[in-house]
Structure formats: structure tokens, C-alpha cells
Length: 68
Length: 265
Image (cartoon, rainbow over all chains, first blue to last red; front, side):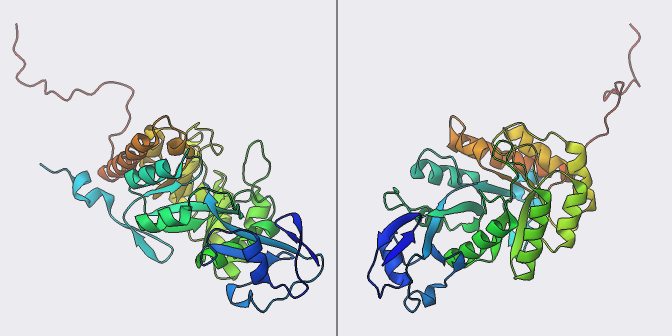
């Protein structure tokens, strides 16, 4: 199926979860300092594995950057 | 002889949120040319709290800001920079809470790209929502005493009036308003944005602010590490001067040397 990951269309397996999307995002360190929103709603880390993705969903994977 | 300023008497700890802090300088991490330069500068600043932003993961990013902050043992204060609406700021704060495990947030809700000035109504709405959700809200606000009061009434843990627009380095353009905000507030007042050089930071403290938050003044200085040390000294000096009680300004001179015993020549 097709998802929108950080603004870009990506193909993932039909069983893909939020955890798969985080790995696909290329986050250098997924153990800490990373957060995810699906369709604008935060998905807590503990629910990444269990939250299945659906066709066309928008996933944002964010982490800390320099900022004032 | 060790001065009071050096001995710590004039740099008494202060409380922000539910925690005690020694440094009255909060440094933003934006604008540094490299992670190495940022690390050296943060160390030189003596800051205990540093701000970070949240952005989409960049697989090609060099170095981790989280590693630097951990190495220096600093407290991470996420911001909501780049948010134009209460809705976006609230969502960003919730993402930050998840990413960093902190309920503290520097709340920025700006009105436009050109001035980066806060949008008062969106800011207040976001503050109310986040306070109700248990956040420790530190709002970047206009130098408007009424808005500052409304933010305090909404339950914000501090108010952070700007000196002048973000990154402008134009200093404190309305010291009268900042003084009114200091007088009326029972939460800490942190001068946030517009600091250009050390005298601006000292002035903020002399006006009675509890702390200063700055980024560009250090990160975009020709020598950020040196400027970080200058800001550290300025905040200490300004706080000491405020505590010491300055002399009143007079129109005419007042001799410090006595007239008594002046020889007739």
C-alpha cells in the first residue's frame, strides 16, 4: 500500500505498522528523541508496533534539531 | 577579595516550573555553524537549559544534538518554532512531550514570517489548552503587559516577553513595558528574543527579569564561544547590579569628593 511518510509517497507492505514507518524514515537513532504522528495524532512509542497503517495515511516522524 | 557577584550571593538560584536553577541564561541551539561549535559555546555559556526544535527526521543529518545535550548534562526545552496556529503549536508540544519525555515547552505561535512576532490570540488559546493538558508552558510573548498578565492567569509557568524581533539583535526596544511586566508578574519573567550583545542581556537583568533567553546573539556572532562567555558574565553582572540598587539618575552633578577642608589658595 501507499503511505505519505514525511511528505513523500512510499510503498510499504500491507501489514506495515508505525514501527516499520519509523525505520523507513531513516531516523539515525530510533531509541530516543523521536516522535510520530499519524494523521496529525501522536502515536506513543509503546503503540508503534501495534498500530497498523492504512492506505494513504500521512505519517510524520520527527526528532530534535537545532532551534531557538 | 572575592566579590559578591563571584561568590554567588548575587546569583542566587531561581525557580522555574518546579525546579531550582543556578544559571539565569537560557540558550537556544539554533544558528550554530557546527555541532562542535555549538557544544563549545553551550559549555562557555554556563546555561543549564537549552532549547531545541522538532523537525522531520533527516537521514543525512550530521551529528546528534541529543548526544551533545546529554554529554553536557543540560535540560532540554523543546520549542514550537514555526507554528502559526494554536492547533499546530499544541500538536507540536505533544510530539515534543513524546520525543523528550518532558512536559515543558517553549510556546511560540507566530503571526507571520517577516516579523516572527507572536500572534496574541492564538498564543493565549494554545497556552490555555496546554496548561489544561498538564504542560509547563513558557510562552514567547509580545512586550505587552496585558497579554503577559493573561498568560500568567492562564497558568503559564513564566512569561517571556521579547526585547525586539527574533534574530534582529535590536536589543530591548521598550524597556518601560518590560519593567511593567516585571512589576506585575508573580511568575518568572524571561527576556526572550532580540538580544544583540552583552549590554542588552545586562539591561534585561537590570530591568528585573529573572533570566534571559537568547540564541542568535551567540550562535551568529563572529566568535560564538567568546560571546557565550560574555553573555554569561553580562547576566551575572546585570543581576548583581539590580540586586545592589543603582543610584538615582540626576540632571546635575553631585560631587563624591567633600567640599569640607578645601584649602584656600
